[in-house]
Image 1 (cartoon, rainbow, N blue to C red):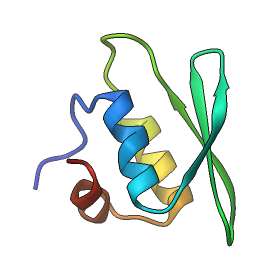
Image 2 (image 1 turned 30 degrees about the horizontal axis):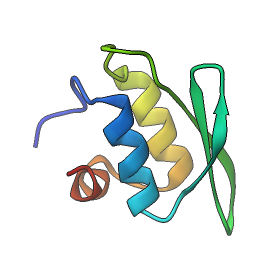
Image 3 (image 1 turned 120 degrees about the horizontal axis):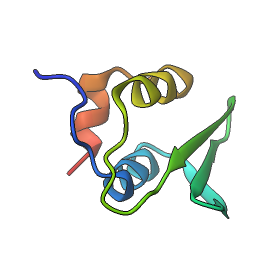
Image 4 (image 1 turned 90 degrees about the vertical axis):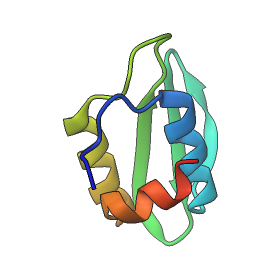
Length: 76
């Protein structure tokens, strides 16, 4: 499977929501997500027409306890 290239921020947020994360609102251009039982807060930048950067997505996946392959099952 290929790496995290050109993933749309809105779809990334939806994928985390499908994985059980809850959107806690948006401050500026960043959507905050939390999940019961996980102490981390995910912060996803939602900038028009700009894909999520690979390093940021990898960091958020690590915080969420997901592999890229697991995440892609939610990214529809």
